[in-house]
Each structure stands twice: as C-alpha cells, then as structure tokens.
Length: 296
Ligand code: NDP
Image 1: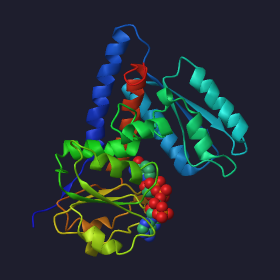
Image 2: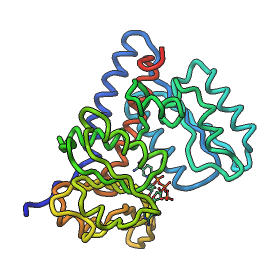
Image 3: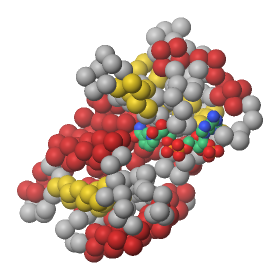
Image 4: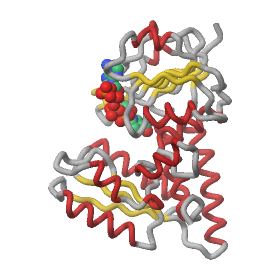
C-alpha cells in the first residue's frame, strides 16, 4: 500500500489565517474597527493558559483585537455570570469565549446559556447548537468546524462512507457526528457515535472509512482497530513527560500514530493536525460576528 498522507493542519491554518488577515485589512480600510475577541480564563490550569495564549497570539497574527479577563478559581458563579453580562453588553467586543474547564462550583450549562448567541463564537450556546442541528446559519463549534475544513481541503469523500466517531462530548463528538450526517458535503456519511458504554468498539472501528478519535485517552486507537486505507482524524491532546524536550513534555493524541499511520490512507498528527484548525475556526466565527453575518 502507498504511504499515508499526513494532514498538515498547521499549513492549512496558516493559509486560512492569511485569508482572514486580508478581510481584516479590508474592514479597516473601509473605516471599521478590527474584530475584537475576548476570553474569560478562570483559575490556573496550565493547558487552559496555553490555549488562551495561543488564541491571543492568533488574534495578533490576523489583526484582531484581543482581551483576556483573568479570574482566580474562587471567583464564584455569580461574579462570572456578571462578567458575561458585561461582555454581552459591551459593544466594543464582537465575540467572547469562556475557557473550559471551570471550577466545580460553577455550572458550565448556566455559563454557556448566559452568553448571548450572537457573541457565542465558540458555538456552544444551545441556540447555536440547535441551529447547527437543523442546518440554519450559526456559529459552528470550533473543533468540529476545523475537522470539516480538513475534510474539504483534503477532498476526503464523505458521501455514503461509514464514519465512526469515538467520544460524545458536547464540544466535539456529538456535533461532528451531526455535521457529517447532514445533507451535503462534507456530510451524507453514515455515522456511528461511540462512547464508554459501546459494545464491540473494536469491530465498529474496523468498519470505519473515516475514524474520528475524540475520546481523551492517550493512544487509545491501535492499528488493529483500523481498516486498511481508512482516514483517521485524531482530536485528542495529551501532555506526556519527556525529558528530552525543553518544555519537559510532548504532545500525543488519542491514536497510536506510529503504528496506525502504516495502515491509513490519510491521518492527522498530534500536534499539527486538528488543533491549529480549532483556533482558526474561532477566528472565522469572530470575523462573522464582527460583520454581523449570522445575527443582524
Ligand atoms: P471528553 O473528555 O469530554 O469525553 C470523552 C468521551 O470519550 C466521552 O463521550 C466518553 O464516553 C468517551 N470515552 C472515554 N473513554 C472511553 C472508552 N474507553 N471507550 C469508549 N468511549 C470512551 O471529550 P472531549 O471531546 O472534550 O475531548 C476529547 C479529547 O480531545 C481530549 O484529549 C481533549 O483534550 C481533546 N480536545 C482537543 C481539541 C483540539 O482543538 N484539538 C479541542 C477539544 C478537545 P462517555 O460519554 O460514556 O463518558
């Protein structure tokens, strides 16, 4: 079998960021303010800190304004909801995100529901999720939208294909399973959504033409779970200790890349696969928010 194509998410993300930067320049030339993305960060989770910093860096690259609202983990639900109300009403801010996870005393559902759908550029509000399900214009959740962009860019056929999604989270597994089963392209796939109660997982995976792993278990997907010639998209991100790295860690995914990539026709690596596209999707949603493309 010929060698697997390794999906270059970084390169694709750079291309899409250049396109966004051109649009931002046009807005400025026409006398508009550049898009403004805000992020709320609660606590000191190192992974969340890294994500928010990379979002800020990406904003700079494309010419957006960005602001970060940092709070200690003891902020409490009431104060956080008040901050959300403040950002909902701040006309200078086009869109904002609340970086997850949140401390246990704060209800994620309450927080996400409080964000105005028109500023919910993460696409997590029930209104945006509902619109996504019935194929109405909305902000698509960032990671699933990033996966769709990979599928489009690499012209991965989806119609009539067996697509298996591992993991049913609200932010990745469930939305991507809906998006790939909708009419159109990418879509028209026959999707199986697996979770911790699925029986016969290995057999189900072996039947997949497209396997999307968003399970949160390091290198869970082994070569014997993958059909020869399948496309594998790895969403997982895990830090593992590595003394040979300056940072002291390296990133791996939910897929045993070195062995699985010997069987696939196409595979996304970690890092450099889905991750960079997630951030780009957030920028694209913020651009849409600034132009009032979805909510007038
Ligand atoms: P969650 O961690 O919230 O959920 C994991 C899902 O996998 C659940 O549905 C769970 O089932 C299922 N699961 C866990 N263990 C098993 C098992 N042994 N067999 C079958 N199913 C199992 O998922 P997320 O989507 O939030 O995150 C998944 C991964 O993706 C993480 O590594 C995360 O860091 C990464 N991620 C990466 C992003 C990116 O930009 N690249 C963005 C978001 C997440 P059940 O529902 O039954 O508990």
